Amino acid sequence: MGVTLKFIGALRRDSGKDQITLECKNEVLLIDLVNNLTRDLPLLRSSLLDERLKPPKSNALVLVNGKEISILNGLQTKVRDGDEVVFIPVVHGG
Image (cartoon, rainbow, N blue to C red; front, side):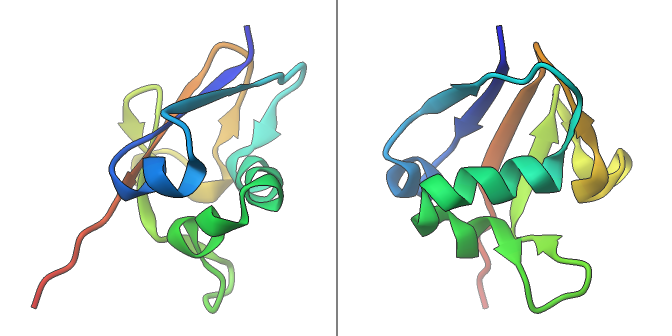
């Protein structure tokens, strides 16, 4: 089954895909999943992580099974086989 990652808007363009399914036999932290993902798809790195902050924060709205990660455990949220993670770009205006 795996963990399904979905990309919305500009993140779809940067990933080159609408979605990816990753095999995940054990629980994994979302931050580790993002780090592994961005090794393979480096265009996503700056869109998904603000690494100037310690610990890093997400630059995108991230949903795990329909819940925004800020009400879960942030990038320390555990994901497992069968979960869905959706990445939505944040648009700022001025």
